[in-house]
Amino acid sequence: MTERLPATHFDYYRLAKEYEATGRYKEALEAYKKAIEKKKDYAHAWYYKALLHHRLKQYKDAKCCAETALKLQPSWHDHVQRILSDCESHIR
Image 1 (cartoon, rainbow, N blue to C red):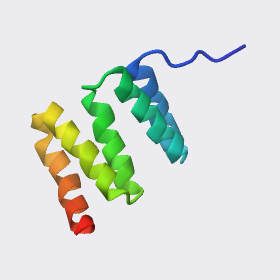
Image 2 (spheres, rainbow, N blue to C red; image 1 turned 45 degrees about the vertical axis):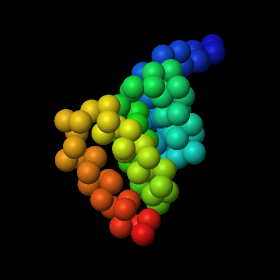
Image 3 (cartoon, helix red, strand yellow; image 1 turned 30 degrees about the vertical axis):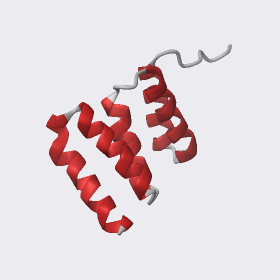
């Protein structure tokens, strides 16, 4: 029996979360990227991609993703600002 390939932005997002949970970070980042390609304004994918980049100490990428998440979901300001502030302190 073959596995069904991801078809929607949410399928890729869910796959990214599974990869991330099992330590497959490169695959997780790629799945987040594909989720975003399917739905450019998918704020959750931008936010969790930012968190993963941050965890991997990829601060410039984390900052870029977090800024996009914040533009898409201004109500997430408090959560996103913590990532942005920490990234700024590491980029300087």
